[in-house]
Length: 232
Image (cartoon, rainbow, N blue to C red):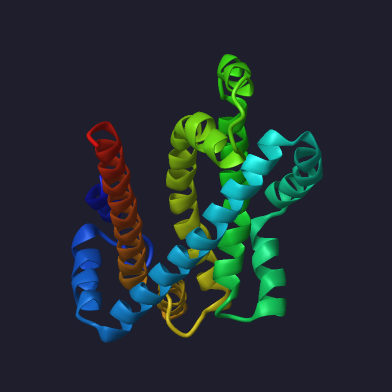
C-alpha cells in the first residue's frame, strides 16, 4: 500500500516510497549525528517518565484515599487536560528554553494520565476487604502493601503503557517546534526545511521503531515482574 501510494503520487516530494525511505534510514543509522539525536530524545522520554510516573502515583493514591485531595487536584487535572499541547510547548519554550521544554511538556501531559489511572485503581479496591482490614490495627504501609498495591498494579501498568507512547509523541512534537541541538524532532524539521522528504520519512520511521522498542522493553519488564510474583 505504501509503494502503491508512492506510485500514485508520482513524486518523492509528495509521498516517497519505502525503498528511498529505507535507503535514507540506513544512511542515518551510520551517522553519528543521528545516533546522538536518538540518544538525546530517548533520555528526554525517560526523564519525563521517571519524574511524572512516581509523582502521579503518589498524588493519585492520596486523591483516591482523601476526598479533600481529590477535590483540590481535580481542577488542575482538568485544566492540564484541556490545554492544547501546542500552547504548552510555546509557553514552556519562553520560560524554560530549548532543552527543557520537551521534558516539561511531556511531564505535564503524562502526569494527569498516571494520576487518573491511580485514582481509578484506588477506587476499584474491594470495599469488603477494606472493612475486613479495619478490624486489624495495621500501619498505613502494610495496608497499602496488602490491600491497595495488588489492585493498583494493573492500573499503574496500563497508565505506564499509555504514558510511554504519549511521551514519545509529545517529546518529538516539542522537539520539532523548539529544535534542541540534538533531537529526533530537530532532524525532522531540518529535513522538512530542506525538502528532503525521504529523509523526513526516515526520521519518522526511526522514531516509530524507537517508541515501539521502548514499549516492548516495558512489556518484558512487566512480564518478568509478574512471573517473579507468581513464582517467588
